[in-house]
Image 1 (cartoon, rainbow, N blue to C red):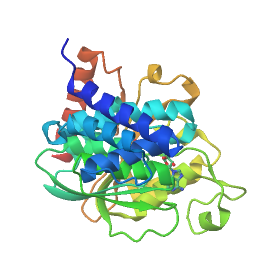
Image 2: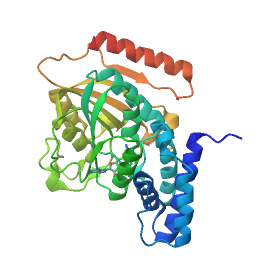
Image 3: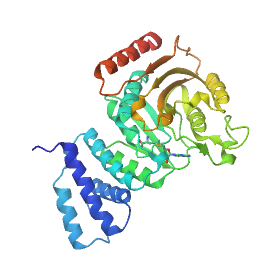
Length: 328
Ligand code: SAM
């Protein structure tokens, strides 16, 4: 039986991570980052390994030439191994953005952002899966991308993933709601962390700070992203379905009306979410600028499951028509 390229890479990442995990006495995800470093550098960088493990790793690395695999094969295999590692220690706010969502965001970025070269930011880059899924779809465009992430293991995974896929991403390991030392970007993509942001001192510098108690971090992320986007730039957020229904929603709505034009809200299929209350949508915004006008009509759609090809085709055509009518 023929083994697919993704399976070959999965086996390599998985087995070498297990060997390193055992010997370095670390978590599986830390070991995955180590094996990724080795593959990227083309040598074994850990000094504390036994001769036997070094020999075994060398043999496995030599069997695979990464140059022969597509960026998407590398991303998919790496993503599957991360999913395995995440099962070891589950953290609900660290969930990777699934492929189907990444593909759609990639499609939208491709359609909305027309410049041949642009700057793209993901302020909650996590493992980099959403960012690299989107990058892999922007053929013939030159993109300077920036990722920010508070968790040091996740950003390491994002760094390895970008290296293996040969995407020159600038990564910052910091709280995205603190001042960002980056130039304004043309577009933002982000699967927003949802919940309360604990640091009220930082929230105080935001227009969207709650009158009482903690502010929603997803609201602050939206404000921070708009601040760092150029006028007329686009923003694509994965948001909770109830975004406009919470007690802090009226202020968010006012803020969005003042600073942006809502382009569309695409609801992801409920079947994607175990808990229906955690279901999400894609919110598309355009930051206000001198030239732009609000769309005649906001693009609203309920997305089908990715396996429903006929319905998916209908929705993609609806999106294309909407773009032709509103974005000329
Ligand atoms: N798109 C990512 C991927 O494909 O792996 C997943 C994003 S996940 C839903 C949200 C991310 O936001 C988590 O990785 C979390 O650690 C990060 N995060 C939460 N609060 C943050 C903050 N204040 N600054 C930076 N990152 C933060």
